Image (cartoon, rainbow, N blue to C red; front, side):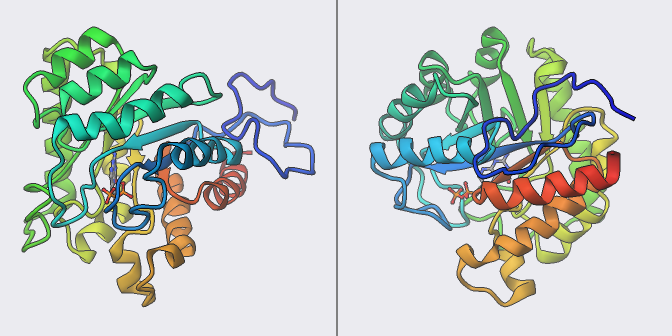
Length: 290
Ligand code: HH2
């Protein structure tokens, strides 16, 4: 049966596709490509720190199939040093500006309202806040007024100390309750519910077992009724399972989690290695939904 395509394909514009795409309803998944304009991110610190290198890499992520490019100027890895707003602005805004006209949505990965405001003015339309609007009292109102998309992510504690000794009675139930509460707080602050996306915060105050439980039981987070974002890309729990110390070698592990998360209903996949995720998700989605 041939079904009319109603939504743009998530991989529109991707290079290297020699075969005609399937004429079936496209699966409801999109890729958020990670663009860290930082000297100290856990897997790509310093690689895209210079503006021109960052912009070129952002364009490459889009060419590979990213529907969103997530530009970040402050690492949230365990133990990362905080970055002053002026420094974060100087890293992020020129890159957002340069990518704003490109064929993808631009997201800013920040918990500072001042940085988000400047990025939105420069053309971003998505705020990815790992503190779920708790980090800066001005953030919820800013997001509400801008009418932009927003990702609310779960984190236990704060980046400096979050991996010290994270404990939960039931990690999935507690993350779900947190996201429900943060969604209600965002809506109460005037954020439109249809703009909200939810993220269990893989690796943010979680042990290996916590991360795996969240992935295994992701349907429980999906049941909250908003698109679920999953950010497993190159993270250390994958290294613990595979024995791969170099984060660049964790692509296959990342892809496994993406496919499992898709099957459980996740819609947005935050990854560094866009081409690998795109092919895996396209095949998995066609198998599940065609
Ligand atoms: N993970 C990181 C940063 N931002 N945002 C969301 N929504 N979900 C995530 O899982 C997430 C995130 C950490 O990854 P990365 O940006 O590669 O590293 P760093 O924080 O060191 O820059």
